[in-house]
Length: 86
Image 1 (cartoon, rainbow, N blue to C red):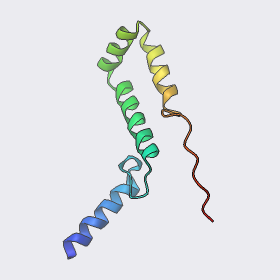
Image 2: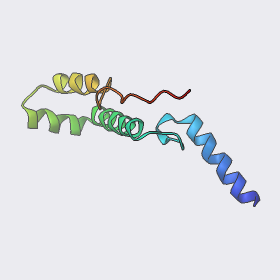
Image 3: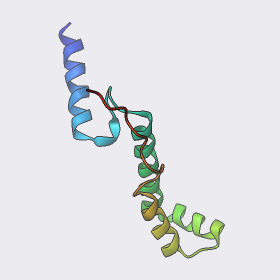
Image 4: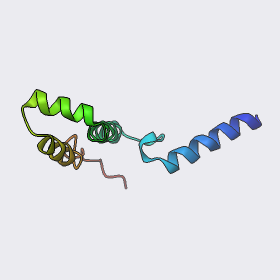
């Protein structure tokens, strides 16, 4: 029983420390936004992937990096409206 509580508290600690790990109340939209932002950050951070995208799109590396940074603002569009709870 003690191990179960310890694992649960470790999971809660990770979820509070790292935003992208999610939690029980994470919506599908929030999860997708985290995935898209993590992917874009990875593409920007790895020069070889950035070179590949620039070559495939026939754009400069700076333009591809700028486009990826812009997409990080709202990668999945506007958030869905939540129903009002009263």
